[in-house]
Length: 425
Image 1: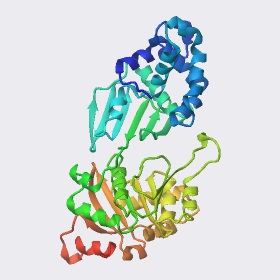
Image 2 (image 1 turned 135 degrees about the vertical axis):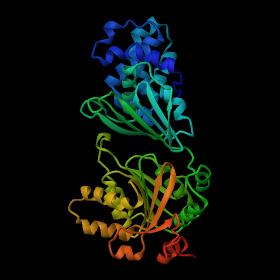
Image 3 (image 1 turned 135 degrees about the horizontal axis):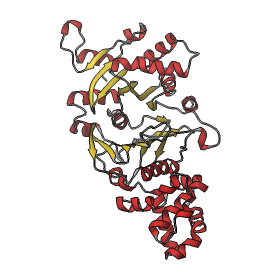
Image 4 (image 1 turned 60 degrees about the horizontal axis):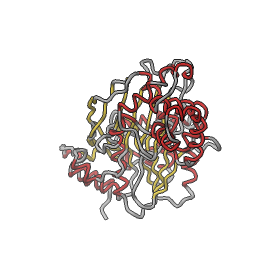
């Protein structure tokens, strides 16, 4: 489906209709559409008001275009001839308007961009290799930007309004995770945050080339990937956790059978023998499918590994349960350091499972978890291992595998603890 790539085109299409529409005025009284520029946004707004679910279904590939094309023609029949448009031309223009990313489209297609963030209609930044930079991208005005943000949510199956003023959706076709907030939650107008996942996962050698890894920690991570150890990747947002986890999965043995169970699709593994499953949220209709359901069902699927993906809430309890089941488990979590990741995941798990004691949750986590990898600014800063002693004592202290510790009196240099955690063949 063609995409809008012209800033001018998008601004013109929005400006002539959505400005009055967003202030609650009746556009039909103020607009006498005579051109494509006028007519297309008018039709789009009426369709989004009357049948947003149809737009979302077409965007997700759950429905073909025929029903939407019929609705377009039904909505525009009277005005189409006045605008001098053919039916085919009108349908194409409306579909372009509904399913494009406008001035953000070049950034969506840029493989070097990992994050696109907008705080105002004229204020955008991107991240490349963990470095944030300002860009000149802007929308024509605040009202056009507001409508664009809401449209992105609707067409990706989300719900956003005054009562639900924050929504996180996934554009699986383009591999985007999108967060949008609108007033009253967002005081300075709508904001949008887009996490863009590469079409092709980076491998460890690629991450060494761009500076995330060194030759030494690349070899250590390669050995961990092939050893069956449970690993938790930690760091702040956009530190490179998901990027490294994707590369880690690609370095695992080909025959290892992995269940990737996520709240929102982000990993997109290319490795064979991966099962990809996602929760089903309440607004999606039908029976709700939770992460606990996915983890429990996985016990009967002859798995070698669980991959929980991003841990931001209830996922923490499921990570601990999966890691304590005897399976390898992988995930990412926001934390200030590798050592802090244990307390962070336990605090999230206790909130999700208040009936479990803190002592039990800690013991389960430390018995199941083998290594913590901490990233900062798109670089691996620390790799910590939990040895059998720490696991039995229910301590969150660990041995630093990388960077090497020079004090030989403690016998915690690079080679010794590495042999403890990853036995040689």
